[in-house]
Length: 334
Image (cartoon, rainbow, N blue to C red; front, side, top):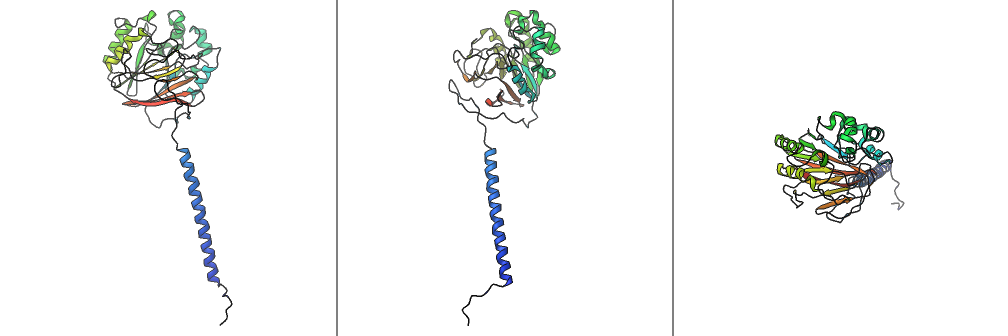
């Protein structure tokens, strides 16, 4: 018998080739799966807000602006202290509105320096005015610097409120939204004033589970102007009615508070959560103190706040002109 190695036949060669092809294919599939898995893991990371926390502590991180909500629940978006022809920051916040659907609100001081018809035409109209048809405004002290709020009323027309009043309300989805005038010297804010009596009647008539109110001067603030006790009657009426959220401007910064009662005591069960959003375009200012129950403070960025109003809860995100989210969270209605 010969000791020479046996040469492989045709069938053996075919089997070897087939096995090689199968091994190569399996390797490619494994590599592709690993790449796909890593890509999904990177893309699915949760965003971290730039500023979160309580008290003076802030976490300096960043995240991209949220994608449009898949929910059909309404969106309310806006800010206060907006258009000044000497600055381009109002145009920058208006560009954010270009990308966000929903109802636009303003929290007062719409056109600087004194709310004249010319300033609304020249400064506000080219920027936030692009969204006039979906805007529900509130007046501020600079708007009142033009006698009888004439520039504001002329520009916004019927959206500024009924004749003889600079306050009004509307329903947005399951929510009731109340717009008040905190320029108390001109209109009165105490309970027996026309605005106070209207607010009481409006709250009693509303059947909504969730209520959000907007006015210019914040009840509580760590900013230059600080706390404003003249709007205490607003807070008191809303608190007694079980309202949920208050949005203001006036101080040119962003600040979020924990839920509080009218006297400024923490009340997680029934208190109103306040957002100061004076970041629409006017010159920013720093904080002079840290008010009680202040949770987040940003004084270095313009931006808008975006609310998604669910039937029994809400989400918020403060979107900076850089496109980053400076603050975000959610809450339940009372």
